[in-house]
Length: 140
Image (cartoon, rainbow, N blue to C red; front, side, top):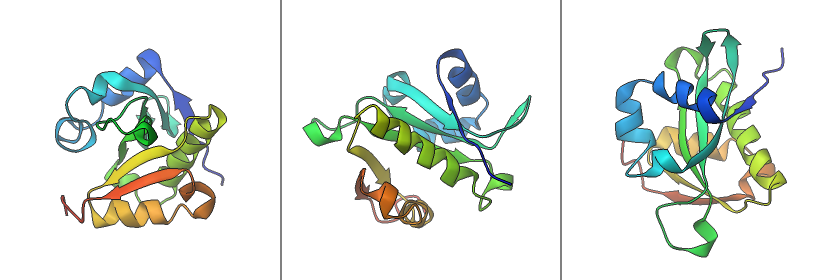
């Protein structure tokens, strides 16, 4: 069965963000004013009231570098849906949407070994659009 990710924005995106575990929102996915800078997200809907996780894209980033004006602001997959392809489907759609809108390169920070491995698993077709910074397992 193919996993189909969907673009979300506006009130739907806000609702999904509000349904993520609170510690993830404040401690890991968003920092400072980043939450207000999110333009869109991608998710996999499992049923009317469930979703596998969320990838969010911010139109600005924490740095002033001209190559870092787009960023993956957050990646979260609920534990029960990890390692099943949902995160990869959401991430690939987020990158594809940025490429379609000429919003590249896309900056992404990796602060854990798991996220670093996940990013690397996307393959060169998608990695070519990412401007990656690794913080060497800050949250492992």
